[in-house]
Image 1 (cartoon, rainbow, N blue to C red):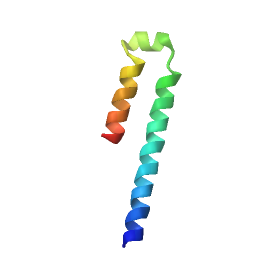
Image 2: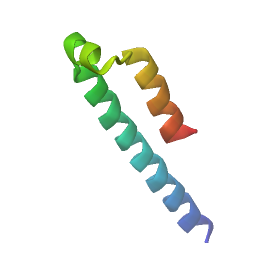
Image 3: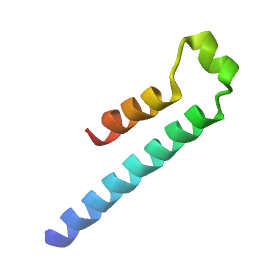
Image 4: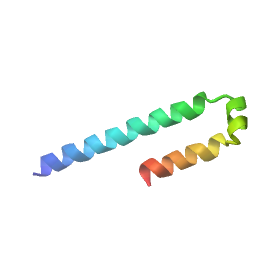
Length: 55
């Protein structure tokens, strides 16, 4: 029971980390031109990704 909970939490954490890393990589790959076209701010985007994934 405790072991199953530990495994489940670990899987959840790994899935969150994987998703976070994917989104960060995607944001970092955007050129300044891409960001300007979207009226985006890289720092703000990274902040929102962190909040979305980790709360």
